[in-house]
Image (cartoon, rainbow, N blue to C red):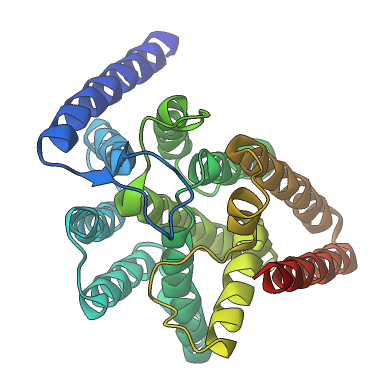
Length: 324
């Protein structure tokens, strides 16, 4: 058993490292580069789309698992394809949203989610599509996409191993290996690459899949707070942009963490680690609350975080407005 596991993960690491090396050459040749502009949080040209490692890792698992979870993999391939095209050349918003919607429906089918009430399905569908878009904007700060995904995948792995089995453990660990390899090149003062749309969207899609499985197995919505930090920041940022009459689908740098990086010149790695650590603390409380049936504790922590976030965000907005 140990030899089989060693063979599997050794092969995975070699496969992903070779794939990433080849991708770097392709990206340089075909100019798949993220060049800084007025909306960027980086100062130099950086390879974009290195998150291709994530769908490749899942495809490696798919082949080794004798082709399990076919609908999930089809959805991942489809959504990764449109995201990679968007990394190369901006795609129409309608086309992206349509592909996102189809992919989420494939996830619903994979986890037998259609047995829930129709209004819950509609709400879940909207939230899932919105989550894909939220994660899509969470790139550009060194380490933020990878570390946040590592926290999420690590949490799912802990729940699966220590509390109850709800998914395929190797699938979680396979993607976690892909994230760690990506972080080796991204979590630096001067990142060598960014995940791009293909990386951030694929990671969101995979984590949504695990979240839906968890909800389906426990019939509890408490687990949605495992994405609390990105969720709150995305929703509040959208509200601010609507109030300012901005196009919410256009690129920007008005997330709270972007203010810290660009206006206050905080080190990217410090911001990423801070967000990851906060989500670890919240995830720990969520798990404890579920195990002890103390729902009030989870609600209190979530409300407390939202209040603190809104205060900090309002302060940041005011200081920026006064500095203009």
